[in-house]
Length: 231
Image (cartoon, rainbow, N blue to C red; front, top):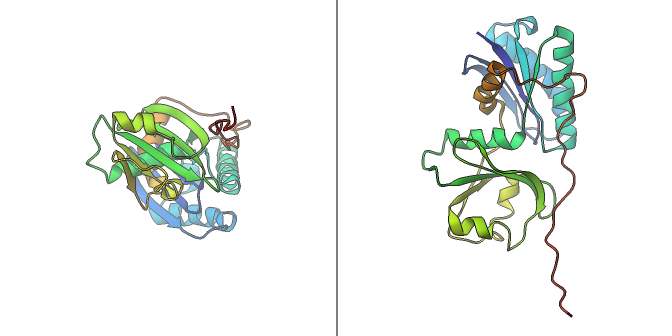
């Protein structure tokens, strides 16, 4: 009967959820940019009160590990580590892109085993944090930081459909022009989508070191080398 607090702060949305045995007992979110530092602990207190629990009742804390907003991730991880330190509870880390993919699958019955999912988080200009997942959330390509141009994903799109979503995908719609490129709006990583992921990791005892764990900021970017026009 594991009780897990889930914290997601990798984007402008700040959300928390309380899950027990794959069931979300309660959830709260706030869509107020640059306010995670003032909102997060308040939301957690409200969440526990709303569900009728206290912090000491928790069996673990799960937190979004990135990539995403530097400040948001730092705040979320700091609060999660603080709770785990104080209560001697294990910490579970889940990448924000996997959380976003799980969120997408909640409302995407049209996805088949041949399709790929590409969550994207905006990282300024034409830069995004992205990964490729199959419909069982197994990784088809690792998380990377990349610059999107007209050649991006063309090889994959020749083979199968790819669902692009997240605030990073919105700005890439015109650049990634292909019949197999499908864009879905209004998908953000939320704490509710962490429930099943966190419970699976808890059962497998896949915990991170509370003392040394740091968010996955992923600052470097991969760019295609431009062709030399003169040689």
